[in-house]
Image (cartoon, rainbow, N blue to C red; front, side, top):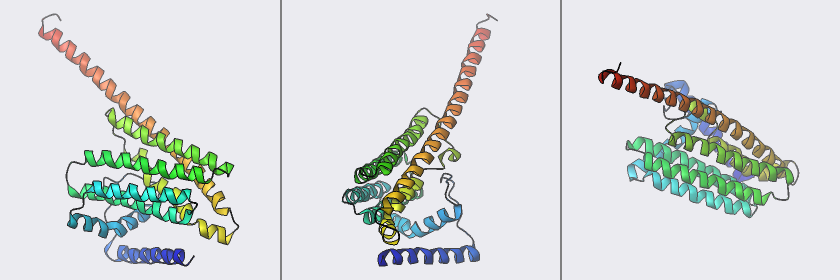
Length: 266
C-alpha cells in the first residue's frame, strides 16, 4: 500500500507540474501520427511529456526502436508470469511499464526519421503477442471466477479481431484514418493493467476477491469497446476499399475506351 501510495503521489505531482507548464508556456503540440483515442488529449500529452526524457535518451544512446519493442514484450512476459503466480499487483505494474515501452519505441521510430515499415511490423507483431500473453495469463488466473473467465475470453477475441482488422485493411491498401482507431493498444493496456495494479488495494479496502470482480468488469469493458472498435475499423476499411475498387473500374473502362478511339473503332 505504501508503494502504491508513493507511485500515485508521484503521478499526481507530475500532473501538477505539467499543468503549470501548460499554463505558462502552453501544451506541447499534438503529434500528427498519433491516432484518436477515448482518453482525453490532456492526459495523452502529459504521458508523452513524461516519457520524452526516455525517448531522448534512446536517441542519444543510439538505441533502436526494435530494441525498445523487444524490451517491452519481455516485460509483458514477466507480467504474464506474475499474473499466473497470482501476483496481480506486480503483474499490473509490469504490464503498464511494457505498454509505456511500446509507446516510447513508437516515438523513437518516428523521431529517427527513417522508413519505419520494418519497425512497425515488429512492433505490431510483438504488441499482439504481449496482449495475448497477458490476457491468457489472466484467463488462467481467474478460471475459478466464472464472470472474469468469460470476460477474459471475449476480450482475447476482441483484441485479435481489432488487430486483424487493421492489418488486413492496410495489407489490402486501405489505410485506416485515426478516427477508426480510437480504442487501440494503449487504451486496452490501461484497462487491463490498471485493475491488476490496483488489485491489492481493492482487496484491502473492500473484501478479499473484490479485485477479481473489478478485473472482470474491466475485461468486459475491453471486450465491448474492442468489438466496437473492430466494427468501426472494418466498416471504414470496407468503404475505402469500395471506393478504391470503383475508381479502379472507372480507370479500366476509361482506358478501354481510349484504346478503341485510338484504334479507329469508335
